[in-house]
Image (cartoon, chains in turn yellow, green):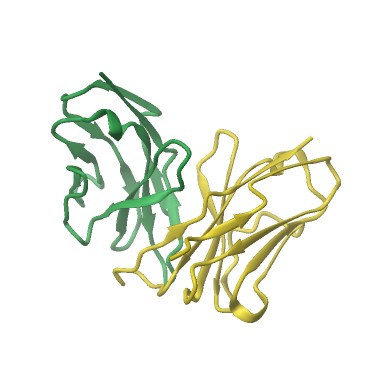
Length: 117
Length: 109
């Protein structure tokens, strides 16, 4: 079974440009999450989709970030315009079920490394 | 607010020595705690969760609500245990995880 896949694995863009990161969750996983780790900081939650609906987007840093999951399959995270502080690793994860104590496992992708210069 | 603290950024031990990676948390409700591990050039993966009360790869972790801790322990470290370890807490309706800063474990031969 394929795991969570992310594209691109690495991206270098100039400040002010736009970047779109893509995540393909594990087939059949309704829950999709985006996290990121910027330099020297903890891995932080960005948002959570249940199918195509945004369940929780409390972690999105500002309106330069736009996440979509049309059709409830793959998801994209667009950063427009990118700023220097957006540099870091963006992780996507998926799970079958959500909810605490559900015995559910969250599977992570390898991450997309973004460098804004 | 929920918070996870891993006080050690780096922990270096010799092969065969006991290892303990510390994790403390703050959360007002009943937390669900996890340890995730990231080996070199691999993705982040779940190592264990407190509700399972299991031992994975010789690692165990006990939730201590009095001390608000979830330390990860292994009696005899192996070189292949060298990796980045993250403690995480789940709170709220969804599966949102709050991560600690991570501890890099280096097991020397």
